[in-house]
Image 1 (tube, helix red, strand yellow):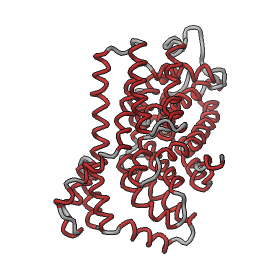
Image 2: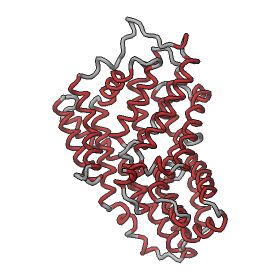
Image 3: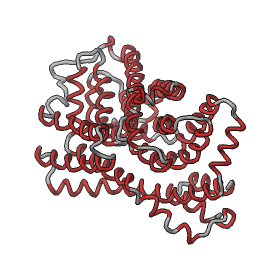
Length: 424
């Protein structure tokens, strides 16, 4: 199995597409793995044909429909009305709006692009340095995954056999915790970065978002997370059925508000299909590597090794966090969740760690990689969206990275933060 891992790392280093890297690392070493090539043929299809995974393309479609239909501006307007009177308000608006949008898209990168485009110019006009605007935009984008529904949580639940509904419920309080830590960083940093500690607001600097959405449109946007999360938690929908209902609702909203024409809606279907196909292809090909590891009892051997190496579950969690932090720095999020989740879950069970709690730790940790170079997809998207060189972000995003790591530590060692729903 060691040779297979080396093949995988080599393929990733030279830039091989992730899906191909997972499959080729097994194909080239099939004899030593005692895996018959013809037995692998059906694994990709079996891996992506599960009912739960249908939610992934549906939630991506919902995000595209609502983004193209002006949702980001609507949610920003709502956030501005709620907390617009606070000192340094627009930083909080970006964090809150990212949480709102995350409750619809389930995607961190999509949240960064949409909210950055809607709010970035306004923050710059109010006196914030562009590097700071891009940094808070990238960090707040993590809420796109932590606020349910979350595509990585859907993937983890399907791969590791954990209830996706429970994962969605569990991640609410961790998401609030992360949002609060980012808000504390903004409260501290805005006083040092803004002229005289105050945002610049003049009669010529009218908010670009306030006139961008009617009250009806804003309420329509706000009802989306209510429909999705309320339907799931109320027991009316499974996560996949909620995604389908959200798609129907999104189409009705954009058509009634005339923000998208029927032709635009059809185009949005195509735009959403591309990233959905990429994710599902990665899931299918990762299944080949996972099957090879299971046949060679790698998860069981790793669990035995970890329990022998660490007598204390607290030390085990520390080691897992360090490992996943490094993995998240170099590997695409969904692929990392698919690879590390099923691999580490048996070890966590051997230590008596709750599967739901461990899932939140894994996804939260790997998500931090989105703001940790060298991969750092959120940083690159935020830099492009806010038209700022990445070098200008370096002295700002470290504050938010530190806040995310502190939040991860609390989530890791205080299980009640993730398992809060079991107290009711």
